Amino acid sequence: MMLLSGDPPRSRLLSVLLIAIVLGLALAPLLFPGAKALNVATKICIFAALVASYDLLLGYTGTVSFAHTMFYGIGSYAIAIALYSLGPSWSAIAIGLVIGLPLAALLALAIGLFSLRVEAIFFAMITLAVASAFLVLASQLSWLTGGEDGRSFQLPELLRPGTVFVKNFFGVPLNGRTLTYYIIFIGCAAMILGLLRVVNSPFGRVLQAVRENRFRAEALGYRTVFHLTYANVLAALVAASAGALNAMALRYAGPDTSLSFAIMLDILLMVVIGGMGTIYGAIIGAAIFILAQNYLQALMGLASNAAAEAGLPLLPGLLHPDRWLLWLGLLFIASVYFFPTGIVGRLRQTAHHATTR
View 1 (cartoon, rainbow, N blue to C red):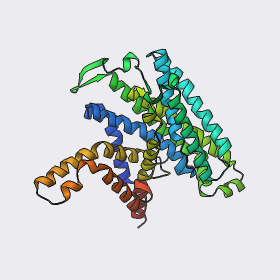
View 2 (tube, one colour):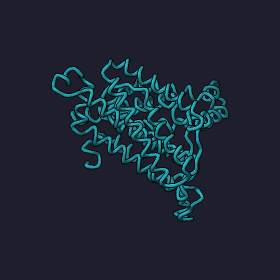
View 3 (cartoon, rainbow, N blue to C red):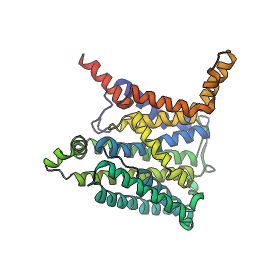
View 4 (cartoon, rainbow, N blue to C red):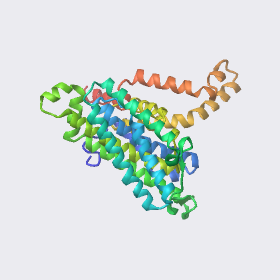
């Protein structure tokens, strides 16, 4: 309970889902030794932290920001540029973090102070403009960022796949790639637990009050712009940290992997699927969305072949792997229709109704 900052899942099924996901991620290098499976587990960890940081804004303050991928990209590029310029060393990683995290915090502070006084839609448009300008800037400054090609780099020797610590650990080698994964896993877990502490603190209660009625919160004496700006800075720091971990996982940073608007849409989808204003929804949403993104096409291929062998009409065409995006979209529409408060919200409501009968 203390680890979860006094905010338990409040649903048995949700608890089982969360335990299954966390245990699966914690044991991923042992249970799923393949390169693709480990890459998927890494992406789930990073996006769970990134989506949780965005949930702090959207779910707990009602603020819609399109600049979140900008902070994510700042963290990625800071690590990439430092390791590319200074070489594969731990000091280069430290310098990248020392430059990237304060830069993200300062930009978030500036955006918050100058923009959070306006109406929500205007703030969203301002953040979209700033994020678009940053994307263009990163693409144009080829001497620094590598332009459209991005920056590839090497990690310190301890984190390289060729560095083997244990050749056979229950049938799986433990190497630098495994160490990199656990650094990412522990870092993302710490950020999510930290955000749980924030939203369950008096500061988090004020954020929820601002979300419900900003004018009433101001009338009670709370400085709403200060609280919203502080939340924006915290979310930016977590997003930049997630971006730094993503760059280390990919050993690359570029516009498509760090600053793309498609990443922003994915974040929004994960928040809605998991449940806004819960933090736990980030873990559920990231796991479901990324697993579907990586394995739905293969599953549809198997289903299409099975339908064709059974001689069923229409189904082989409908389940063709090329139509996986269509089915992913239908799954999203169904989840919004049947779970308007997200999976976490629906499970909590069901558990609450069961206990009050």
